[in-house]
Image 1 (cartoon, rainbow, N blue to C red):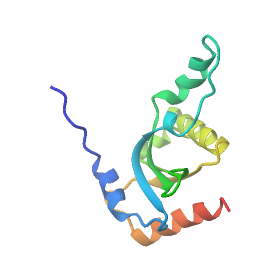
Image 2 (image 1 turned 90 degrees about the vertical axis):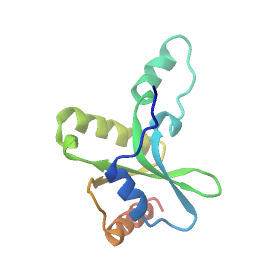
Image 3 (image 1 turned 30 degrees about the horizontal axis):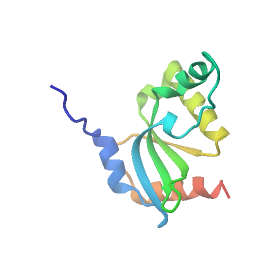
Image 4 (image 1 turned 135 degrees about the vertical axis):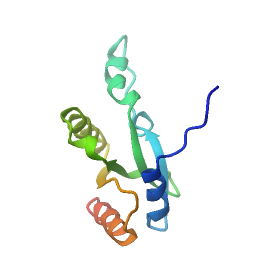
Length: 130
C-alpha cells in the first residue's frame, strides 16, 4: 500500500533552522517545472524542452508572501554532488533558474544547521538580486 513520504532528517533540520525575511515563505521539495514555464510548442518541441525539467525537484524555495513569486532556491548538497553527473545536473539547474531570475544557494547538507550562518547566506544571496 502507498505510504506518505517523510522529509529526510537533514531537510527537516533545515526547515527548523532557517531565518527568512518577514515577507517570505519557505517551501520544501518543489518540482522545477513548477518554477519555470516552458512555452507550448508544436509536436515534440514542448516535450523536448519540458523533459529535462519535468522530473527534477529543488530542496527549498523562498517565495514572497504577497505574490508567491520564487526568489531563491536552496539546494542541500551532500557528497553525491561531487559526482560528475550530479555536478552536471547542478549546473543545468543553476542555468535554468538564473534564466528566470531565481538565485540559487548551494548549502552543505548536515544533521544540524547554524541559524546565524544560514540566515547570513540567505540574506547575502537575496541582496545580490537587488
